[in-house]
Length: 147
Image (cartoon, rainbow, N blue to C red; front, side, top):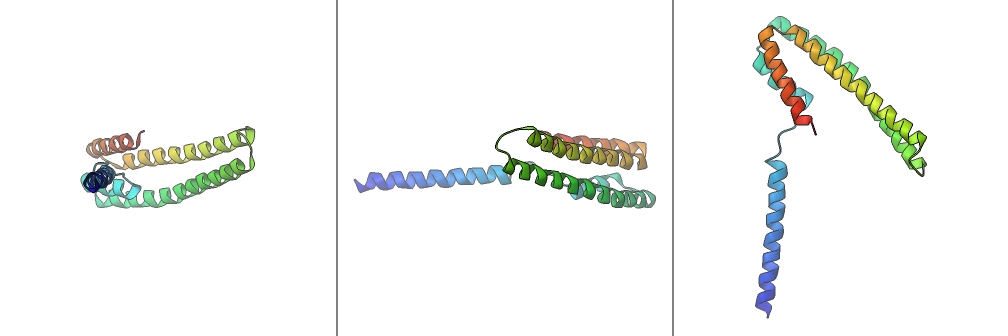
């Protein structure tokens, strides 16, 4: 009688290990790599072969954009903190909660608009041939982050 119990326990252990291994493989190896801002730029600029003048213009644009984006990100974070506080205080979904959600989305919208403006400013620095490469990279990136 011990033999069947041991076989069942061994089978269950193997199933658990296999399931965990499969989940790890799926999450780690089969998911497309997420691109952050730096990865996007590194990959893009390697393919664009920018001139020294274009590199200097892009660098100046990046510095200005980084400061602008930091302000918008701070605004999104602050709006989220306010929302969290209101949700903690309110007993139900009501006008203050709704207003706080609208505030978060407004901050996120401004951040996205600033990002898209930045992309168009970058594009203006490029030659028509480089713009085709740029457009392809932007399209691929947006498709990766689309739900």
